Amino acid sequence: MQIVRIGLDLAKYIFEVHGVDAHGKVVLRKTLRRDAVSSFFANLPPCLIGMEASNGAHYWARVLSGFGHQVRLISPQFVAPYVKSNKNDRNDAEAICEAAGRPTMRFVPVKSVDQLAVQALHRIRSRLVSGRTKLANQIRGILAEHGIVIARNIAKLRQNLTYMIEGDGNGLSSLVRALVGELKAELAELDQRIAAYDRRIRELYRNNELCQRLGKIEGVGPLSATALMAAVGDRQGFKNGRQFAAWLGLVPKQRSSGGPRSFVWHQQTWRSLPTHLADPWCTRLAGSSKGQTGSKKPLA
Image 1 (cartoon, helix red, strand yellow):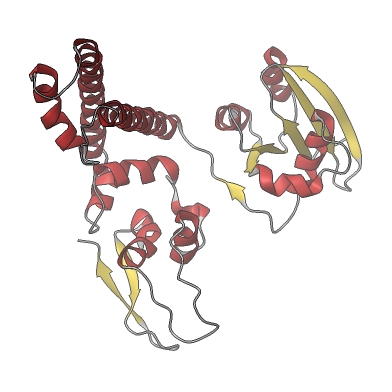
Image 2 (cartoon, rainbow, N blue to C red):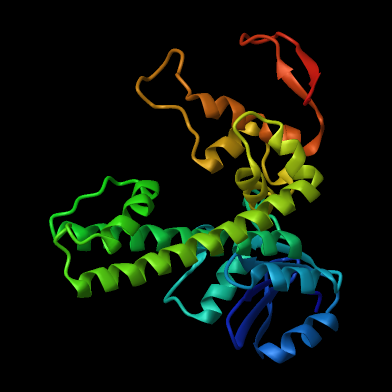
């Protein structure tokens, strides 16, 4: 019994394993508890292991790769068409095993520990920024109920809060002024926490060579550079710059069936980004017609 491909359905505690041989015949069906997964695959001959790119997938990809296995992560939307019957863990493992063997399947690159750490930093900062926006909207709503309208600008909100809390001629009761004062203190605390995360991001930007190279592209700063480094890492996951632009959502406007298409400015900037990630010397086309040769120019 030679296992050549395994589909592993991840979970918090109970994992399902589905393995096939070189002819696609099922040779392994097994249920594993979390503490037995590492020992099971450590004693297994090297093979191809497919997993859904879900929570914890990057951790298990690094662990199983350390045992000599070839690990491929698949987006869940590409696994769903291979589920044969009712959705359960065992059928999901079989579908993952089938999808991992498709020659045209697109896989998700495995993120390193550093990439996941930077991504966590951005996600926490994003949550704080979202919370600050909600808090500012609540403050404006409370003040609007008392006839005080402030423009939708957080800087103007900060400028006017002190006057509204301390002033007596604005029509606010003592209770409302006290509540707004507490919200102002909460807003200031959020500002301090967001500023602390911004300092961490700038520090990562200064100490990372890849981020420095990305920052030389017009319109890319510390936030964008570190976020791209965490999300993409190795540009080998994309065949060309056009595919990467589509992954970012920067696609041309489909207004006609043919003829030239208009692109927004930053689409042209992002399109060459994967080339910069791989090599400081990038090939740019000298003309738009077919058959024209390209010239190599340095990034900076």
